[in-house]
Structures are given as C-alpha cells and as structure tokens.
Length: 355
Ligand SMILES: Nc1nc2c(ncn2[C@@H]2O[C@H](COP(=O)(O)OP(=O)(O)OP(=O)(O)O)[C@@H](O)[C@H]2O)c(=O)[nH]1
Ligand SMILES: [Mg+2]
Image (tube, rainbow, N blue to C red):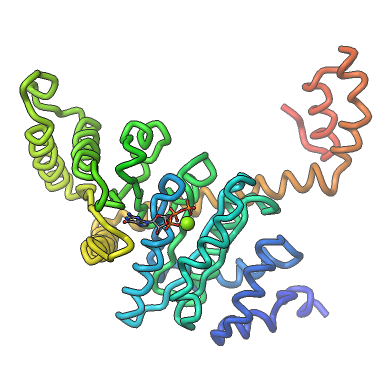
C-alpha cells in the first residue's frame, strides 16, 4: 500500500520518458504546463538527470530574427548529430498573436526532424507562472537528453528577461533598425548578455550599433579613455580602445569578454562564428567554475519560486482567500477595513503568524 502512495502517479510515463519516447516527452510537458497533479513529483524524479544540456537563451526585440537564428543554429547542431530542444515563449500581447504561427513556418524545415523538438508556449494561461513553467519545460528537454536546449523569448518585460537570463548562455539579439543600444540598456538586456548578436547585418547601421554596444560594455567596466568624450575622436577609435580594454579585462579576471557578432540569419552569414562562440562559452563556463555558480543560483531561485507557487495555491485555491476578499470589498471601500487587515485575515487563516 505505502509503495503505491510513495510511487509517482506517473510511473509509467516516467519509464516511457526515460526510454526516449517523444510522445512521453510531449505528455510530460503538458502535465507541467497545466500543473496537473503529480507534475512536481515527476520533475523531482527527473532532477538527477539534469545538467547535461547547454541551455542557450535567445532574447531580443520582437522581429529581431530570433526564430530564424534559432532554426539555423538547430540545423547546424544537427549536422554535428546533436539533438536540439527548443522552447519558444510567445509574447502575451494579443497583437502579436501571430507569432506562434510565424515561428512554426520559420522553423518548418527542422520541425519534422526527430532530433529536434519544438514547443511553443503562450504567455497566457501558464498556470504555474510562465517563467517557472518554461524553465521546467527546459528541464524536461534537458532530462530527455537534448544536447542543446534553446529558449527563445522576446526581450520585453521581466518575465522574458528572467527566462533568458537563467540560461547557461544568454544571447541578446539586436537589429540595426531598432537602432538603439540605449533601448537594450534600458530593458536590462546588457546585464544578461553573454553574447551580443547584431542580426540583419545586411541592413545599414549594423557596424555603428556594434560599435555602440562595445563601447557601452566597456563603459560598464568604468574605464573609458579620457578622450572618449572629446570632439574629433571617432567612434571607431573609441571602439578599438573598448574592444582591447574588454579583452584585457577578461584576461585579467580569467573571464569572458562579451563578444559582439554580426549575423545575417537568413543567409547564414556569421552563424559559424556564433556557434563557435557558444561552444567557447560552454568551455569557459565549465573551466571557470561559472557554470556551477550559475546553476546554484538557478536552483536557489527555483526553490523560491516553487515555495511561492505553493503558498499562492494554498491561499487562493485551497484556502478561503477569495471568499474573505469578496466579503470584505464593501467594508474596504467604506474605509471600515484596510487592505492590510484583510490580508492579515487571509494569511492568518493558514494558521501561520502574520508578522
Ligand atoms: N534582412 C534580414 N531579415 C531577416 C534577418 N533575419 C531574419 N529576418 C527576417 O525578419 C523577420 C522576423 O524574423 P523572426 O526570426 O521571426 O524574428 P523573431 O525575433 O523570432 O520574431 P518574434 O518571435 O515575433 O519576436 C522575418 O521576416 C525574417 O525573415 C536578417 O538577417 N536580415
Ligand atoms: Mg520568434
């Protein structure tokens, strides 16, 4: 009896998953996406199988060419006989609702390859919270044995940044027409980038954007030449200094100089360099100990996210949270109750001290 209670309710699914059946992978993903009973148990069982894949986050503004790059990269990995799992997180905005279809079309050439698995996730309706759920789906792909797991997200909003930023290797894709390195900085993309890609380098402005990014990266180190702000010094000169400075800094720190790579995703130009860079970053992560630091950070964050998810469910699904809230609305409006006393009653109902 106890055996059956302890065993995962998805024992059979687990076995088929471990046997490498794609149908089982798809079912496991649905289970996790819908947070159906037993999904956490399943993830628990698979935890020991994690960590073999290189997780590559690809993020950037809408339409930057992320999907095109992703499918090109996937094809290149396939040439090396590596299997590739792809999670494409679609933006929630109803106005970009066509993204899913677009992704399908652009990834068409790889979508029939059994060595490639593509899952599109809509922002809407992710019961477990999109950020955590998409990372859990990435876990499943890792556990299933894909050598590369690519997470494509649009680099707008905290959730998307959060997804892309917790990959082993984060690629930020910018395009000349979005023009603005400033935009990237504001959006927090500078902080998460391990690699910058200037895609659509066939369009004017790619060189200038690359220069700006390199200068900005260097400025972050707080070491700009005195001449940088002077008139008559070309951006090109500043860039040269910046690039050398970045390399020297990385060398001193035994670290990683964030490269800025120009690509034309459609034609494949620059893709070789991108792939080599991703390989190089994987080696760097391993040898520097950074991989372990990143993974520990990621695991700590997962624990927090799961605790929060459970507490939320406890309050809003199992507890009387909503009922108490609804019953308090009139008193709240009349000023007889405050959001704080109502929150206290809701949390208090769980039987834990409220402050
Ligand atoms: N000129 C040019 N067009 C490109 C390049 N790469 C992609 N495109 C085009 O840009 C458009 C958007 O490409 P996607 O790969 O869907 O871009 P995305 O970043 O995945 O878009 P979302 O997921 O909708 O944010 C498509 O029409 C591509 O054909 C490039 O290097 N040069
Ligand atoms: Mg896309």
